[in-house]
Length: 258
Image (tube, rainbow, N blue to C red; front, top):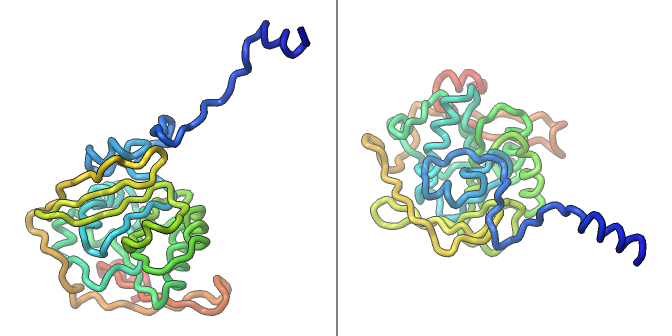
C-alpha cells in the first residue's frame, strides 16, 4: 500500500468545502432585507432583498415597482438618516399626497433626472460610492453589461435596484437576483424570479399590492417641485456631466443647492 493510500485508510478522505448546486437554494446566503411580503421572502436567498449589490426588476415602468418596494423603503427611511435616491424615474410619479400615503416621508426622497444614459450611470455610481443613499432605484433603458458589472461592484454597502425593460430578460447580467414583473388585475403583480442563488422559481409568484387608502395612482409631479441643474466636477469623468436634481422637500432643495 502506498503512503498516500495508507494515509487515506488511516484518516479517511480529506474534508471538502461544501459545494453549491444550482438546483438548490443557497442555505448560507447573507441575511437579506425583509421585503414586507412573506411569500416573496420565502423565495429569496437570505430571506429578503439583497442588502448590497445589483438586483433587477424587469417590466414596464409604473406597473407597481413602488408598491413592491414600499415596505423596504419605509423601513430604510425610518432607520437611517440617508436619502432614498431615485435615478431617472419615469415622467409620471405619484403626487406628494401619494408619497405620504405610501408612508414615504418627503424629506427622505431625492430624485435625479439625468440628461443622458451616461449621466445616469455616473450619478448611480457616485451615489453608491458616496455613502449618502440608503437605497438607489434606477429606471434604466440603456446600459452595457460592463456598466452593470461596475455598478454591481460599486454597490458594496447599498442595495441597487435596476428597473429595466422586459426585453432585458434575454441578455446576460451580473445581477445575482433578476425578476420579471407583470401587472395583473386588481393591483396584483406577478413576479417571475428567473435568476437567484438557486434554481429559477417554477412559476410566477402573484402578490397583492393594492394602493394604500388615500394614495392615488401616478399623477404629474407637484408644481412646487422645480428641478435644478447641477454641474458635475470635470475631474470625475472624461468631459463634464450634469444632472437635473429634483428635491421632494424644501429642506432637500436647499441641501442640493436649489
